Amino acid sequence: MEETYEAFRDKIKNITGERHHKITNSYGVYDMYKFYRKNKPLEKKYVLTESQYFTIIRRINELLSDDLIELGKAVFPHRMGDIEIRKYENKPRIDAEGNLVFNAPIDWDRTLKLWHDDVESYHNKVLIKIETTETFKVLYNKTTAIYNNKSFY
Image 1 (cartoon, rainbow, N blue to C red):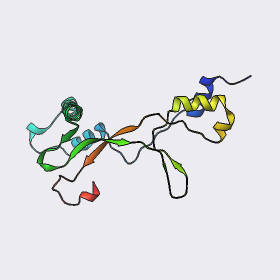
Image 2 (tube, rainbow, N blue to C red):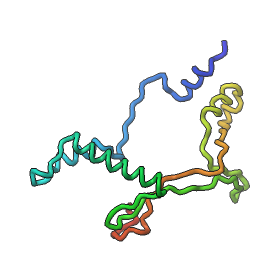
Image 3 (cartoon, rainbow, N blue to C red):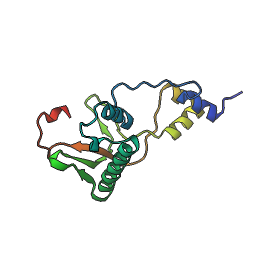
Image 4 (cartoon, one colour):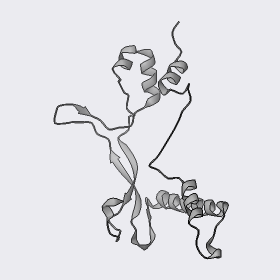
């Protein structure tokens, strides 16, 4: 009996078993709150509760996203640089070794359907790319910043 598409997709995505994630090089909002709580300000008026801290973070993120949507960039105060949305064109090209290079995002839904229907393409790991000519990326632009050691950020 042939395997259904849903069962094949679940097997490829490996979602049938337990997942154990351990991210060691990234900090989230709660990690920063724990750091803030550990190193509280000396003056009582600057001490924030958890809900106040998260409200401030949420509001700052809303303001940054509004600037990104309206202006295409969000400028940080005190000339600390800015965050921009940049558009890149996805064009296929031939590299020095004669291989075709096309850096468009992968359409995983169509790729998994192809792999389910054609076993040979699954073994050869054939990928179907999204048919778009442009990709948008969020970039931190530090050329307008005036701090030292910019290469570390």
